[in-house]
Image (tube, rainbow, N blue to C red; front, side, top):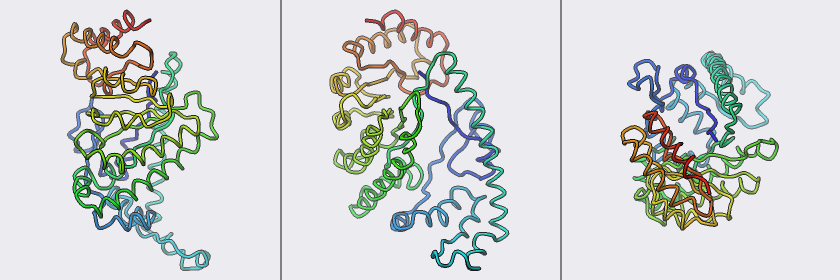
Length: 347
């Protein structure tokens, strides 16, 4: 199975002056042509702005967030929402139709056209791969609410600062629950669309060992994430959870899901121990290090692949996988992996 490709148009991001991403081909970039995009993690919301985010999300996004994240769209901050009884009066017209906003509407139309081109190209590619007989691994994507707060608003260092203050943790919990509800609402299309694959991919970024204690993980990370997981399961959708980084101390918490309803992909855990913990509870994947494909000798790749099969294959409930996306890799090492699977990966 393959993960359906869905990325973004560099041209569209350039038009908006995206501040959180750097990518190959961007003017002035240091990202090599062969590399994937890079995230420029910054603090796009201050501690003092939590109440504004929670009490007026739309207003915050328009007046604070968009100008910081997309400077070329900053004129949208001029838009104000008025009481319903004023919408058909002259009071509503200036904030929607001043010249700077009209120019931004034109720019948004241009951005949409560029994104449409990129989406069409990605759709063609995904169809070609599917036509080869390799079905898609997922048909949707979501995020842990804590990661949304960190990735797009506070940044990792900002989250660390917030975790040291009990009052801030109250705000964090409220924000994570708000983002969970938003994600559930955004995924409602699974109730109405008959997909051949009903799986939603979650890349977990900021819940790794050492980033917070077990109590904080349960309260701020796992419970809001589990809320989304349970909503998907209720819609007959399988959550496909990629636990990035070291997740050795989180395994027992991750078993708190209905049996046979979740897939976990691990980058860095003891897979023999993960097999023991999740057996009969959830399907696991991982975690051949992608660095081995670039730097290891072929015989070491074969040994590591064989060990994963021996540790995880008995009894089922395991899908072989790398510990991350394959980027630079020696072809002979990739071949060695699949040859080993073909030879030893059968009952």
